Image (cartoon, protein in one colour):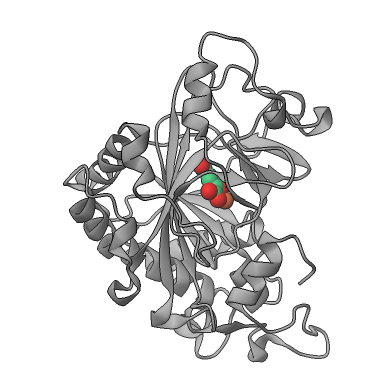
Length: 336
Ligand SMILES: O=C(O)CCC(=O)C(=O)O
Ligand SMILES: [Fe+2]
């Protein structure tokens, strides 16, 4: 894997009036979204109202959604609409800049970190997407060289969002931690994946219009290697989750946040919660964008099953491992 020189955005603009896409973006027939998206009655994906004054009810809903789906949306989450709009506007303006201006933030070749602007170059079929990665929390982890200076509102928009998204993350951690039923329940799970040292990695996904959305993916099927992912989408649908052997569309709910359980929570809870398999489709005419924040343990932090959860009946399913080693194996498709 590495970075390609040409952005998908520029490939897309030259494919605009055609009805074909380059062969490297065409997935094998059985995997294509046009072939295997489920088109029938589906169970409703859970939505949790975080303003529910009944705290126990709120916790129960989060726990159920995390356990049954590994995926849910939250509404009335306390992040003001204008904070989300500003984040979206700043990112949208950045991707609207001329290509040379975006390249200023390109991921340096051979850099260890994923931070920067670029396009994932997969070993197999390519994804119809460009992205920008940079950390937004804690402040000591931030590399401002990857934060666009243009538009000028970019920095404030991201700093403000970071403060609010932390609150939502803490509420989710607290709830799913309680769901484990352990004695020192509220903080045990967050502590097991990095505690206050958790790093918040912002990603902006930019999915240009695609002449053949039935053949390509924005992001092919995967689980997130984070502990938890909290995502803001734009209004163009495209996210799909895998449930009961079907790929089902996630409905766009204005102002909702999308929450994914990631691999590190699956490992820490010895599989009690499972990271959700998901993928994104692209649109024929519209730009889709999304702003996931990946909550990741520091690289040297060791994640393994929480000892109090283990017993003779529940032996460890995963080896304790430094997060950076886990990430390396996953990104290079090596066994864990
Ligand atoms: O764009 C989305 O809705 C999801 C993106 C995603 O799954 C990812 O970037 O890991
Ligand atoms: Fe993902």
